[in-house]
Length: 182
Image 1 (cartoon, rainbow, N blue to C red):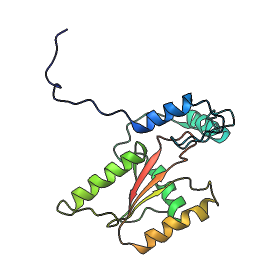
Image 2 (image 1 turned 45 degrees about the horizontal axis):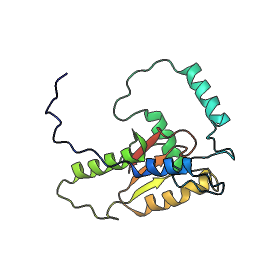
Image 3 (image 1 turned 90 degrees about the vertical axis):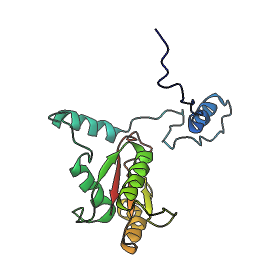
Image 4 (image 1 turned 45 degrees about the vertical axis):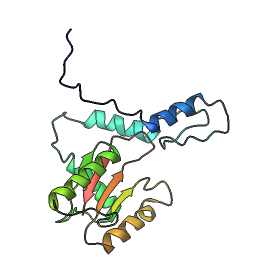
């Protein structure tokens, strides 16, 4: 096999700091250590159990899913509408609101930034110009309605915002994220 020069100019990336932190946690023998890595629920034994509700939902999906058709870039819109209802209390996404599903919150940040760049290519982005709300763990603190109040207050107070909604972050649904510009 001969060597190609097509990628000769690429420099190897630095190791991922978060993965390095997770690896250090695993080999640390202290019993009272705190996992500062990815925020997922762990049992006393250190396992990340699959919650019964998730298993039930997966079984329902398996029974009811009729195909694996390509959804397109926007993902499953019924899912986005239901998430928007949880966040806003409104039944419809509205005229200026739509949902996109992205791989993780980093994907939502990237898509949101690219959307802003396309909408206003000559604009500079300053922190705070367009609020980017990262709503995670809704329903795991005070309740579904109570946990949505901060996002609802912010959305009502500004003309434009981007909302990244983490679906059950920390309980095995990490691939299910939604980006909802308003």
